[in-house]
Length: 126
Image (cartoon, rainbow, N blue to C red; front, side, top):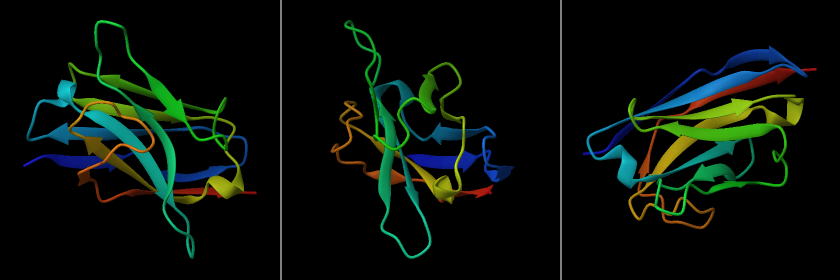
């Protein structure tokens, strides 16, 4: 069974940076697309960023407009881990961040993410 464990959340001042990690186990990591999502208190879960598998044509990354230019998603297949580097953080980035796995590998915003982690809290103070 695929399992995902997020880490790296915490409290940071506005303008600061954090790097979230998503450790994958129970399957072939290189075959799964990975997405990051977040949910703020009282709000619905929203898409943040995602990354495809590595193919002959390369690797595709996707971002929500709200984080484009500030967040970077990456993956290390040798470590079975995906990352979300978050720079220039804003108070509105405060949320629980979840990573999810897409067995289809496309890792697109609308891909079906079948497996989810438990989340890690990110709090950005003003």
